[in-house]
Image (cartoon, rainbow, N blue to C red):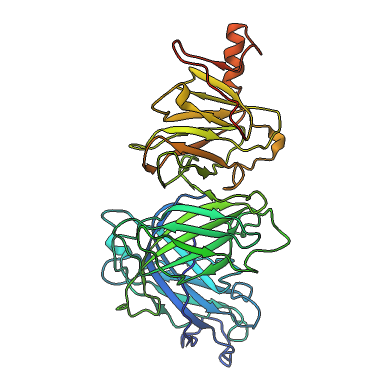
Length: 447
């Protein structure tokens, strides 16, 4: 299950130990340092694809923020455990569900669990309020199993979580990069938030560790984008090459909810980045369930768009349904005089291309191309397949519209150029093989 940090609005409820002391507890045991609940949350969440070990899909996300017994500690280190259950109408399982600790330096008191939510007809048993029970062996002079007063959440209110954001542009600025995005046309969120995760140092649960969270950063209205600059100190200065992941949240709020957390629905869009590789503004992709990287950008004819698929030895690229075709491509200059290999038109056309040179598909395909493949990336170039800012590629398009294309990483592929030349006995004799009737492409465009 996937932890999903919630917006926090602290409030205090001292939890008093239950009058029913567990069997074997001494009669003169005393209650010490009761736990304090800061907030609870329970909402419907739309989780985007990611490689931070958080599952994607629609979930009920429920949890609690608990102050630790000892100042400066965490409730997990203090031995606090949390369970949640639903009993009574609508019919629900009364067996408690373990709510794990989130292990976040940003939300250090959070316990959270996400439960898969079947759509469009969810089980009614999951739509009610959850009741949390907390235990801690340090309470009652160390007696184990002391149940604390249960704390309920709000029930699930909505059946439709918010949509995802698009047009995600990342602009470098040292340790304070700026992220910009737009929301879908016709949707207005109640609030927006942004989180940053460190994938290099995962939690004991095996998930990317949340290191920064900021709620209520403003709201955007389509087509006006929202821009947010990561503040100084949010990212460690001594770790510029860490693999980070950002999630952007659209929050559907409801001021009529009784819970102090008024979120009833949330969407989370994940993107990756690496500060050490980030040198120019790039549109960053999300990761699909099959490992491809998908973009969602509004494009105009002839304008160059820097995109950044994460790759290993190469990638296969394709536009989405109804997208304008690609006119030109500019690959990064990462390997000097060692060229890349580009193939298009199902492998009928191939060329060698140096990084930093513009390649014009219109010389062979006047209407542009909908797909091409790049191989021949030098493994010593240090291209990181899980970084959103490791291989910046610039594209232009033959028309206006949306670019919802995908870039699928490929690895350990024998280059199609080499195979073609071996088959014809012309190895090293040419830089491009043309289809019958096509003019030779010019690969000498200025850097």
